[in-house]
Image (tube, rainbow, N blue to C red; front, side, top):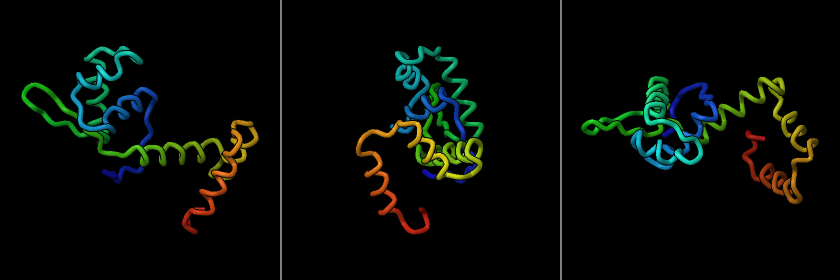
Length: 129
């Protein structure tokens, strides 16, 4: 499902829609129902948002009678990579170590987190460190 799109940056609302589609194909009504409690969006709003994502090549649409079904064309990991990459580029001048240092210095690190990060770094392929 990996798409070759260079930059896939999504708003918080678009991410909510994509989280529904990352579980599998869904109709506009399915997406609206899945987001009803948290977002309470009108069916037409969901349809418009999905149409815009389709025009960007982020989702595909399939017609079944009068109903449109959508599926994700980009994976959650691709979106995450792109958005974190943008964050590092824009806020940390392209230095991922600066992001990590910021997270550690802001005391958002729970006990055991540093050990898990060190284990991930040790297990990472040599080119990814």
